[in-house]
Length: 221
Ligand SMILES: [Zn+2]
Image (tube, rainbow, N blue to C red; front, side, top):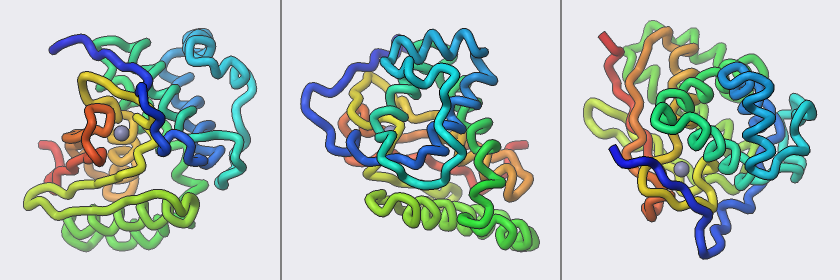
């Protein structure tokens, strides 16, 4: 596999200006710190011009204050990918999973997670569909500008977004939004108790109109 190269887009990407929920930045920072350590994260934050966040994470606030934009989340994601190098995909997925864990309790009401867990008697594909639906509805309530959809693809379900925060303003020679794949995986694992295969199959960073992650309807063996 070729080395991943990520650049800022030469033309402005309006998605990069969308405001993001403060707590999402906080959970991503806490998760990243768990994986790379305090020193490692401080180095990454200096590299991506977010040194102001060193020892100064945003509050646990599940709302948009305007203090953070999609561009900040994308910069953190890309800083981590560069830090991890060839291990970028698996390591950022790990950060995503940990990030989801930080958010589950705070978002449980928003996502209706109690209801989802009560639906465990339903067939797994139905549980997955319900879980992804409530994730997307939760995001819509917090950030009205998001454009999200789901598509049934036989043995997989596609999570599709035109407004991906992980690659906002970036271009790359490969897919770069694995962190969010990890978030989806973490939330579905919590909800269903199953390990599900997730692949990012299309990325805006490569010029596609949407970022797409395909989620397997069958658990890993
Ligand atoms: Zn993306």
